[in-house]
Length: 131
View 1 (cartoon, rainbow, N blue to C red):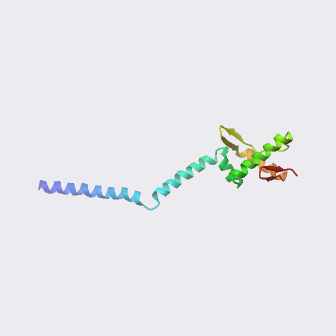
View 2 (view 1 turned 60 degrees about the vertical axis):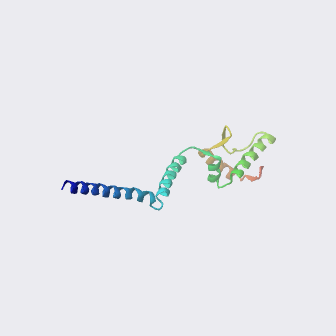
């Protein structure tokens, strides 16, 4: 009789282990499970990034719907006018440089967009055409 209870107990434990193992495996093998976890992590990171007042060159280019090269050309054009013609009339694209990285203040960038639009500025490559 003692043998029957031992076998019954072992079978019960083995069955529970099988159910628990299949539950763990099903989570890992569920289609899209890892992708959903990754998407959640990316969404959380994006939410943190959007609250930050400074944007990188890449983020600024996306914000302005321009390429990174076009943003750099605007900066070069405005700096060329400043170097060649003296004081720059108007507001330059607001940025700061930390080591080799350009950072842009989102609020100042919005102000620059308004002013550049009102002045009807024309940027052609690395040249600012004053009208």
